[in-house]
Image (cartoon, rainbow, N blue to C red):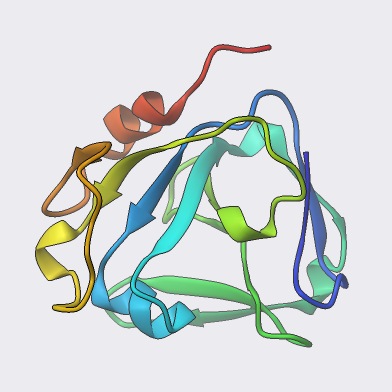
Length: 143
């Protein structure tokens, strides 16, 4: 599946079945996107490749370790590596297509905005679960 930023200068591809999605309700994601939560997924780095515009990716990292990659032209958040893991965070809104993914988890529910209403569906985590467990929970059978 192909993903693109708002202006289309950054394009990436994910091989295989796209994992299910999660929503993050932390204050950092709210500030990054200006929304109640962001929807994303996680893929193994071997399934991810930049098609164009990798030189347009700008980077910001807080001293806490939180990082944000974004398009230097349009400001769209774009995929980034999760710390020193072999996992890549993918903003779901950039994906061009629908393979029937579902939101199966909500993370950082303890820090949600007071005006945010989290659906009952999916698993709820007060914080971030163990990355390997979380990654495996998002996986769907290969088509």
